[in-house]
Image 1 (cartoon, rainbow, N blue to C red):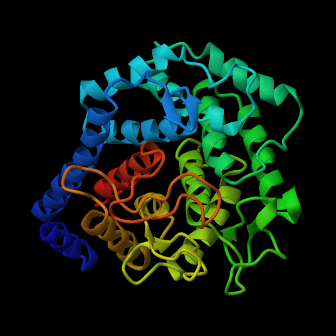
Image 2 (image 1 turned 90 degrees about the vertical axis):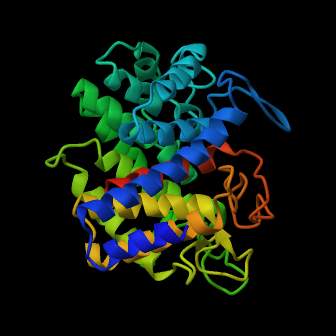
Length: 372
């Protein structure tokens, strides 16, 4: 761990040499592989249902987020076993949204992001007919008010952007933006507080709801989902796309707000503005913020000198404090929608679902890896 922090200091000081950069990348790849190997070993059969209080098929959103991370890891470490593991999962679920092709629940659509990624990787050799049917069905309802909680923005919006890219049909981008704007500006008078640069999780947390210290309730992972969604959409759409600047503006506003509320140890609290409400380090939200910031730095949207120390401090904190020797990730909050859910969050606590934490961590690591 000392080596990782030492190598990162070279980057912070602007002294990165080719050898130092290579050393840092090797360190990142080692810890990414360690966490991923832990997961793939424990969940060796990707087709098996999950059982947390009830049976759920393995293309649920928690697992879908893991595959987002695995696809990112494959970009920097192209092992065939990652593709085999993914295709076995997708084949079993017939490349279809969880539930059915008529499912409009964003959580159940999340798996389609990876289906589309594999289609692109294989040069169009995967069957996306069910993805098209699902997206077209939702658009055909002429409703844009499905995303009633901010997590949904990450679960569904990138799928529309990815599908628009491979088809060249902008109707998918327009639908995604209209749905996003409804959540951002209309639902409960808008879930995005542009003044503070953060999002309320859903209508139940907008004022007059307040945290114990009187601040607004901004849930870390919920904001992380939006931050990641903006990155994942911006990564797909062209520079001259009509809605691109709108996404960028929100990304920059969030980045400024997140920088201001980072903990001194590098993590972010579960409750971003109230450390007294189940305060303490939390890995999944922190990883999503690192993912977004590293991507923003790499793509020239965020100032390197201002944001690189923030991202690296968070990355090093996760590696030093959260990653176990066997690859298990600590400090991952279990599923829920607010700070009190999924507790306790400790180094040794096992969340009800382990998959999305690993996915978020892999997304973060691969983006830091790509920094130069």
